[in-house]
Length: 135
Image (cartoon, rainbow, N blue to C red):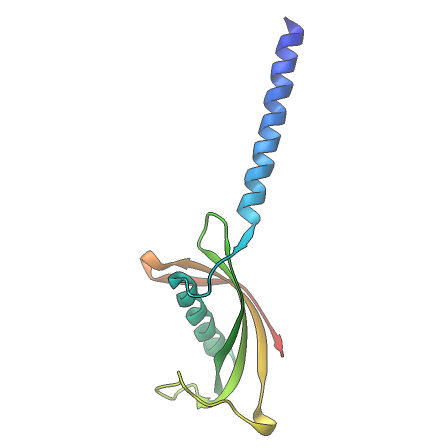
């Protein structure tokens, strides 16, 4: 009787450990997604806008390339790798979407990694983490 109870408890414990480890791994995992996914595109636009708002430079940056597009499993948290270039447009300019890149001594590119939490049903986006370095 004691042996059966012990086997039952050990089996239950092992099952819980395996299930818990599996769920923890899934929750932490990012998977590749298509770069044209609606919420991903909106998250990229948000990340670029936030970068420009928080950047102390007067010139805006525009998106040059999306290097990586990933989503955390079971969430709307996106991992975004972008390359952006400094434009001739200033932050106060009205339309900065198609600004030409600065050339020559003013030319500058940055490589950024963003984690964006998207809650599009509330029109809310937030940057969880960002790192940018000169490219």
